[in-house]
Image (tube, rainbow, N blue to C red; front, side, top):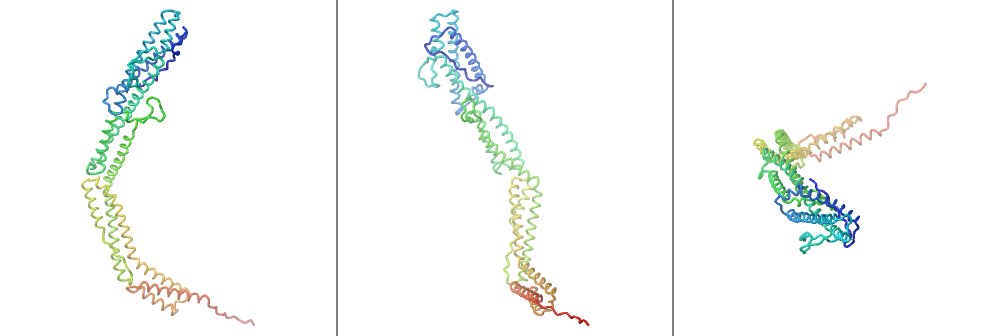
Length: 441
């Protein structure tokens, strides 16, 4: 429920200035309209939902302090309004005595309407005035009432805005929190057993404390608008609420990840078993290849091959046990770790096999080069060249004997290549034999 705006300002004659009959009548009409507007604003303030909530609440902190001052201001507003009403009624009665007021009556009316003719009790702590009473002109009275009204309305509107916005949002978030806790419990995410369970406990405590603080001290959760002087200018401060909502979103994503694990755990476990099995087979192949290399290749350093990843197999067995016992919150992080480490293990096994079989690959490459040059020599009609036959046989014996000395075999292949290249080049540069020509008769 809203309240009317600030009171209109009274515009009186300067103190001690006599007024004509027409000026008195215009002033009384204006003051009557102002009186009605002030009364409407005060009743609207009295009926404001925020004021009723403040009166019935157990307040703390800044709200308790400001509401105590505001209650005093509202009480004085009604006292000042009563004085304003009495002064206006007195002036009306004096003006009603005669159709044409006497000079004395006009002077008295001028004093009532423009002078400091209203005696009021001191506003004490609101104005800092130590006096027991004050004498004010009607325009001063309305100015002061305007200020107190704006201050009181600011407290009431602000508290009402916070109470209208935050508790309902906190309650909705608390309901979502309860659903998330129930879901978390169903997948084994509990306090003391999983970090997300502890997070849910912290969020629950924070929302409980936050709601209690908002209800008891709403003004502590208000962010005033910069440069705004209007009552209620600003917005509710939702910083703590937003932080709790983000934390709950993080936990919800974690719970959803655990649920995903429950749905496809068996598929992921089978895939892990397959990856580790391939890694083991590759390592076995690498160990066998190492023995072959050591037997067939001489003067070659062959790296050692490690055994199977026992730790990964043990963790895989633990993961299977977690699945069997439906301990999804434990299975989720373990599967994520195992999947990456299993891929790394397979890559390591393949690299080990490549490193071990490198000498065999070098021997195969040398054999291929030797046969390729032999074919080239044959195409150029040099297959029966004694030097080439000798050098080919030397290189071939080295490459097809065990153990094979790769360095010596490579040098033999290079010598054969050079001899073959020189022979082919010599064949190209030989002069062609003259052809027989018949003589003409």
